[in-house]
Image (cartoon, rainbow, N blue to C red; front, side, top):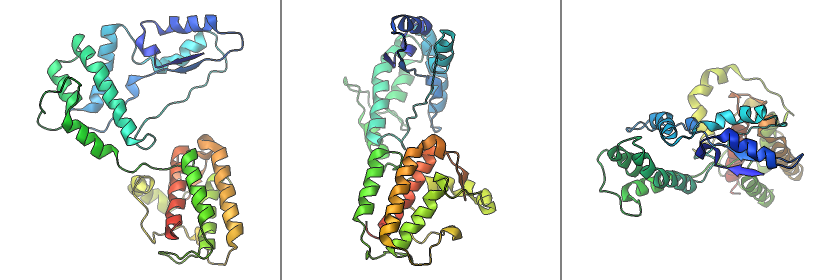
Length: 314
């Protein structure tokens, strides 16, 4: 039985869940997406978007008789109903995991779906809602059209959200693209920077990814404890690695390697990495950053291999 994006819109979520349990066949399973508007966190803006999401949903919920924080309570409701084998996963939506255009459309849908209702229930003055919903620039735009559009905010959305997305080895499409490029790499490919040849580069990538698969356990270096907080956002973000960036000396490959063997080893490691999954991978320690989440490992390993494939034009 599936119930998605509903529980925050009914006055008694517990009663809904009880009825679902009543009609569920013995041994059946429920799949729920329970929203929680108190878990929306935003970068500070002139109109205090972060404060908006922490206060306004609660006011709106009280006005319409619904619980906009039902997401954090759903586990307890299911437990109290006697449900077994309850698992909770957080659905994270941000500009690293969701295409920019898609992310922009989500905000537009919330804008178009809630503005009138917020005004109707006197949650915020209509003037403030229009300013928040249709324009984030210092001076208000012209009034919105009947279709609820504002050229200024739409142009801003297009400009901001079309920045390059970050790949991850945990994403099947991103992983398939990396494997395709690896298979297309030639043993005699010319390097565009650095000192390694293609076989050495493959061995270097193997050494790096082995730190996340359990084959090469690491401890965080002292220099990492000092410097990692200063460069973490840059290294783990969408900005490409600099050419000839410094590397851990233990990952430097100086001896000659067999190209075919190293390529096969790297492909096997990438597949093992994906099968290991974010939760297990997140237990590994990075030699420089120390503790990384599984998602951060996925993005970092993708970015590292992508960087070195570009080094040889692949």
